[in-house]
Image 1 (cartoon, one colour):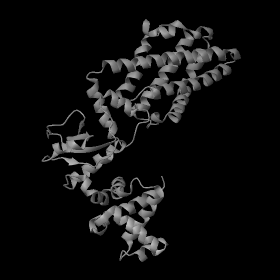
Image 2 (tube, helix red, strand yellow; image 1 turned 90 degrees about the vertical axis):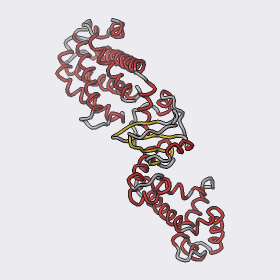
Image 3 (cartoon, one colour; image 1 turned 90 degrees about the horizontal axis):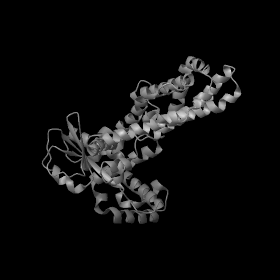
Length: 384
């Protein structure tokens, strides 16, 4: 009986006329549809396709809540223990999906708001006294509070009872890092990493291997997951890269943590082209396969300008672009392209020479730089 105690300790349904129950029951389909629509509209994580598992779980949860509430109006003292496992299952699903409770709690609040308004409308249509609004709203809030408590209990039970929780959480963590689109209801990444005992690095690189390959010498900081006969590794420390020498590994470039999927994407493309290090072939990968790599190439080309004031970065970037586009690579040509005085162009070209050195004369670098700057310009000018 202890699991149903939230319902037993306070029973505002005794103050409601049982005649309201059949009125609610006939309106449940439209009422639950309105609740689901409101939740999907206001909680981003539940904006999934109608046929998806998330959408089905949401619709079932709302239908279950409205059905139980109607039963309580009809028989306030009827046993409710059989509902407890079903509400706890909702919390368990949130945990097993790698999400926290924030989204479900928000859904409960939105559902309660809609229910308060619409249940009062039903009572008014039934010509019940207007004073019913107060106990009816109290009953809705009591019910929502009880359901939320059971869902939290289910969430905590699932977390406490998970076998080998750190290993399972690491699988969730690597899956999260390699997702291109983020689930807004997902547990915050620092919290997930803490449960996985994985210190969050600033940058990572991904490594792609056949699943059958065994790589000795990898320590606990390397996350791994096997998918479709491939082993995906998320490596936070570049010193570990020596472990992949002589293997069939394709190594992606180092990227910020939230762009790990780009590193894996590069590693996969490099493997298709028979390359080992994607970092050394970003221009080729970009030409063949698209824009995410262009951002990495631009970062690589403009690395010498990092740390300079933004205005100076822009001026030198424009000058570099004009220099690369010129035929004779002279100050007058650059000045004409930018609409500046030749002496100003000479000063900027001297600064670029100090930053880039002999690379300005290297055809391979000039190609990479021109491609990077064209890609960067296209990204900045495209609508978001």
